[in-house]
Length: 80
Image 1: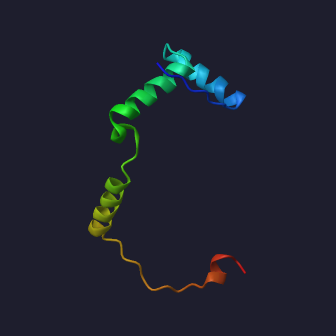
Image 2: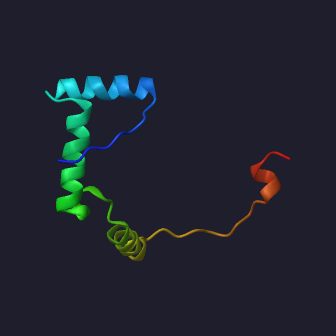
């Protein structure tokens, strides 16, 4: 088995250690689990941006929002 070394801010490490303890593991265990899941199924831990874009386009097409005439100026918005 290989190993890696990562430097993390002390306050971050304290929070991660508490999070890990609540789950019955260690910070190393959390990282190990994440890396194993990443290696097995990248899509399971990485956001699917293409799916998000597709969904936004779909919702935009269904939207019935209508914007009326613009009766304000940029200065009106910023109280100038």
